[in-house]
Length: 291
Picture 1 (tube, rainbow, N blue to C red):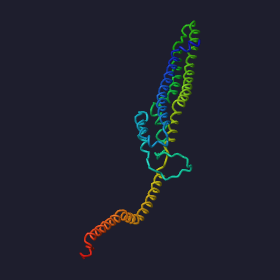
Picture 2 (cartoon, one colour):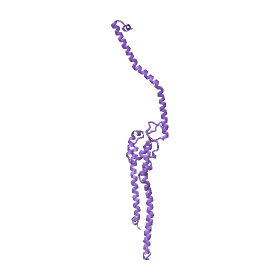
Picture 3 (cartoon, helix red, strand yellow):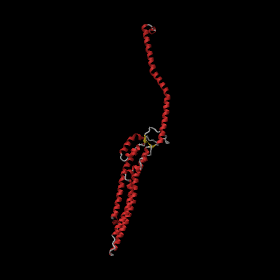
Picture 4 (cartoon, rainbow, N blue to C red):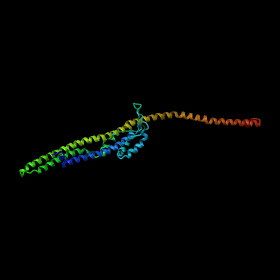
């Protein structure tokens, strides 16, 4: 048997074609995921954590418009909170804290299952090596059955030819299993390399970008912050209530000093002028004569 006769054996051609089709389908699925994940990752890298509250609407529009992340983003938004201020002091004063917080880790929503496995027929890809391996014994026993059927011991002249053909067919049958197992191992190796370079690398990058943009605050911590804020507001309100009478009295005094007193002074001044004018004209204090 020559190498080309083995390669062009129908059973081996079928195994090779199945292997090539599996590689093509896997590469096609992973390429689609790679394009979408790269698009999301590049957009997230362009966002600044410090300006997230101002650009949140743009982020929301992008993630909602993207059919790949739309459903995941809708669940993700339910875990976001938008407090004006959290009264938690960072250990490092230079740390930049986001204005939008997460109550759960981003990996709960954006993970391997939601970003990759749910977008492709991952279970079928995982069964491809098993299918390739199963084709080996199938064609091996099929080839052997055909080989034994072709043996003829009726004539002594054909015995040598029959045995020679049987041996060749058994060799081909054994090679079917060898090729099937070899292609199965090769497929698993190629699939892992494609997955790590085209999918896993970028879904981890998406997780890292979301962790960078959104600080995680637990619900317990947020409730504690709300209690602290409420206490601060109560203290402030008490101070305002206590100082309100004094401030009110000061405001009334200031108002009288600024408006009423000058007005009364002007009236007295006018009355004095009128009095002086009447004294000059009548030679006496007319106002005194009236009383």
